[in-house]
Length: 453
Image (tube, rainbow, N blue to C red):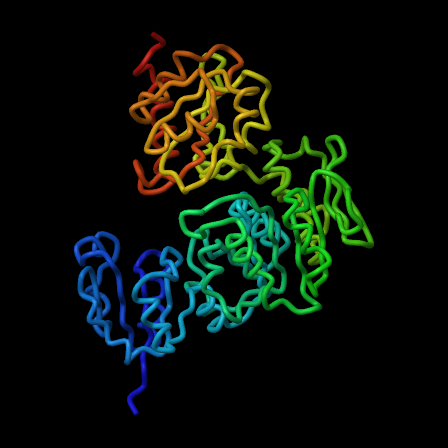
């Protein structure tokens, strides 16, 4: 009987990495994407894959009978017609993370998920382990796909894992798993909070008693897991509230404990002292301390760690006005976290973009206290205006209008904060492009291309 091949559904970043991996292995590959060939070829040179059969755009005559496993990209929902038909035919459907896990050579896996802070925490853990002299790679939902690093041996593989990626796992087992926080997000895909939370919990699905689970205690929904998981469970959060709390804040001192020893990091040693950043530093410090990294190495790595672009990123101070790029804040809870760092009526807040079926009503109180002018743009601007119930609002036509209006209305000591609370897809291809556009217009003001009205 002829050997069956693999199907790849979705030719984004992970789909291209799967093409490379499977082609090198000499596997029969069927590559499927809803976009037309010309659109796909803007990113991928399809001519490189001589032995791959492509089914693009409207071409849906896919020989599913020749596929044993269908590997779906994170952006593909389980309701996709090809997925539904594959499942109907009893074809195995998995995600890229699952496929990569089955093919990895070696490496202790640390997997990080949560609604906010995943990328920063993942990067911090990678930097700490690197400074400790470990052979480490960082992949997953940040940087490069997991499948692109599986052919090498590592001491540690640090993976950022999104809810979309967790939908496609079956046997994936991280020896250490972190669930940082949980709040409403991606309801356009996951429908309700229960469904979203159930998917996030899948990060612990295959862990064993000797493995480690780390939970952010400041998300009440996570506390029900602390005594339910079969693993060694540790908590981190703003206070020492529970027996299992092993990383917490007292004044300006961050306490980190492995159960036998503890050490302290002064918050003043961090380049960014915002609450989200401090919580990310706690999680990264705790996880690496549990792995035996010395406190001196952890401190040194954190001292040298700067905020990642588009995450509470200081851009400029112009005429006494501080401009901050928090374009990665793509849900209301991330905006709430950002606003928690500022004084009352000191923020000119730029929000808006494409709605993810989330409610903005939870921002009412904080916006009322902290924001002196709310600038809204994009598809969700009217919904945000209605749900936050705030009076001092300016509706911008785009980023240029938003940035210049903010500059004109700001006074010494104010903060202009881009923290959209929405995805970028109505105006930009991703949050990075949106954040870069914000920085571009701020630079134009700095360079004297635009002056105060």
